[in-house]
Length: 142
Image (cartoon, rainbow, N blue to C red):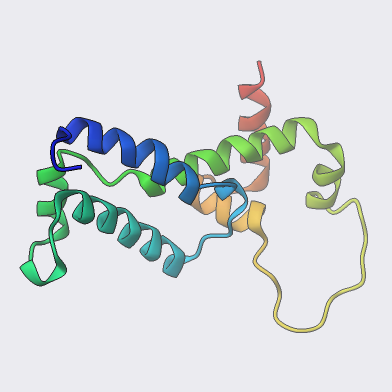
């Protein structure tokens, strides 16, 4: 792989490694720790491509400059998540009924689960409510 150009190596990483790493990532529930792990994975991929060992004491910014890339893996993941949520809201009435509280259930014991669509996606997308996301998803269908 030494005789391959930088552009070909970058295309290989984006097409082969990232496609496998991000398989079904639109359903992941991301917290701060997971975001840190994803950013570290992306940096590690570029370091391996450029053959930079961690003992060389080169900063992550320098690695991205040498690779002539920006940190985009987390942005790609969040984009996939938002497009999937828009699809679910537009096409799956059962899930929308659950999100809007039309289906009643008994309260579970223990710590409340992170409400994926309502809390995480509104935070990531910069919206203040579920209604704003639903309005945005319905407008994108046209």
